[in-house]
Image (cartoon, rainbow over all chains, first blue to last red; front, side):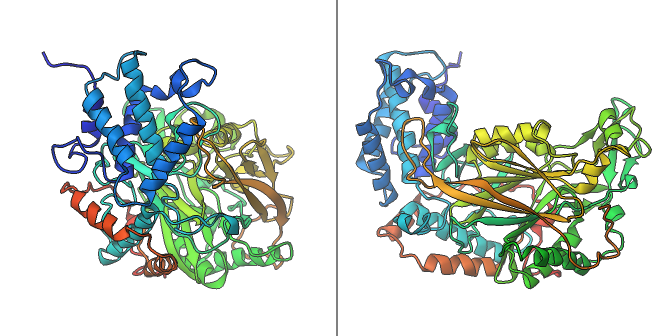
Length: 576
Length: 59
């Protein structure tokens, strides 16, 4: 009867099925730190070894870490980061792991000396691989401020160069989903070479959780992610030269300002299991009127102009979920790139076919008055409008409150984009439901810890005690992301019964270590100008390694209402 | 997510300002020898992400 015991070597072979350096051989250590990381991080996660007293409890007699251990581990990692092959110490640790402990079981509660021995090796190799990848995924030579111009490591440089190779390959293969540069075959989804992405992916990371005890708390620079088949992440290098500590000024436009009930309509038929489980679709044309892209762009440019007396430059415009149709958004982005100094345009879009729509977050990256990158992250979960919500949003005349209405969207594209918007800071965008559903995108958010998460919603008032406040708080705690949720004024106003006092909380801000804060749009204003300041902080891994203050934390610096100065365009419905 | 020649130029000019670390050539040579022959998987790309940015009629 075959053994059902899961051993160290079993896991190594499953993560590195083609061997560490050549097929059929696992004796030599991996040459590339992310490959080693994938193997030891998988062992760490499967065995839960990080929770052992020997690594976590300084008050215990079993505790084995020390200042000397930290210094030595960092030094070995640093040495690897600057050399073309693994240091001797890494080779020795790996050899001991495979040769002496390869047959050790990981699936039993075992505190024997032998068990502790392999756990200590795995723990140290994990930390070394992490240190060897300091700065990976970020532009080489771009530290935080003058005082932190860090030495360029060989791993960081190689990833940056291979990322360019990947972009060049994409240019030569238009319309194809190209994967891999010259050396890293799975860019931009994984840094690994010998770990197939269908088994696990490794990506750079930006925040180390300051609470909790998980694998995520053990690394500063690398994140272990699930199979690419589950969710594919895209790490996008698009730095354009802003200082890392420069404030980020966002113009939040809660468009549409009015959403007619007829924007929602039922789709014929019902799910087979139950006739009350039905589908609805949204029609942005109902609030766009006959506006063309130039007219909408002119309105947004007018808002930028109106905000200028308060401050400039404005770096980004943010519109809520499903604000625009895809073609309209593409055309507006091109006009904004050409006619403004914006860096980013983020908006919810309705893409896809008429009968097979996709609800996406569009992120347009501008540089030198052109669009240099754009990504569309489709929503992973359908919105369920139940009877309570139908009544709250006063939609009972278009959708039967006795049925459950599921959003008619294609949810089969499961991508997640992490975009560099400062040399040391990353941004991710989530759409509505995806902020609340853990799988698959939040697993990725938790592992990578983007500095800033913007959630585009089609939702009621953004109050701390409502669901966006609760889930934003969870992300701000672990991994430590700052979260901005943005909804449309139209949807906020639909949640108020006629004659009742209006809510105007169109956004909510939550920063690590701070309270969630609802942001109100003043009556008569058309946008909120939100300034996010940031500061570099030092995060520590559970084993006590600091990151040299390379983490950026964003804080709410200021918020101002912005009012369009000219006569409002005729296509625009604005209830005040 | 369309490719863009402007982005390539920008990234290239940023990297050109940084001196390649010592041993970089050796690492490249070393990693070339360990690239597996396994084919990269194909992932499902949504139509809007497949459109080439440079060739887009909107640009």
